[in-house]
Image 1: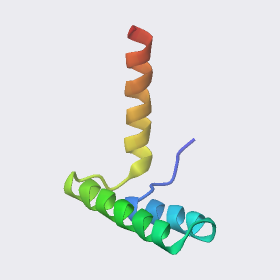
Image 2: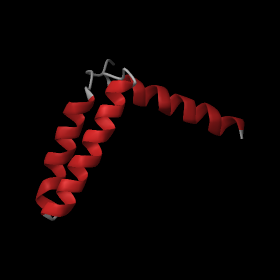
Image 3: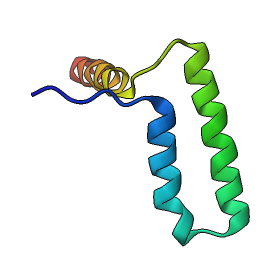
Image 4: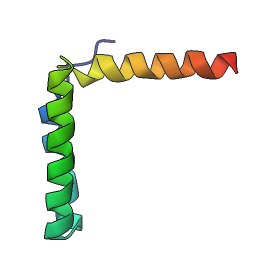
Length: 68
């Protein structure tokens, strides 16, 4: 099974759209600021697809957990 690529800014927008109805304006503004900064950092790291990055991280975590 192949997963569709997930650009960070698309994931950020989906997350914010999901959160907006249940939080105050100030909380939403904080979420928007933090997720924008995180996306900027990801851009700086050259990460353009969260699907492969998360899969790689999950694999690394599983391998580390199996060694302990």
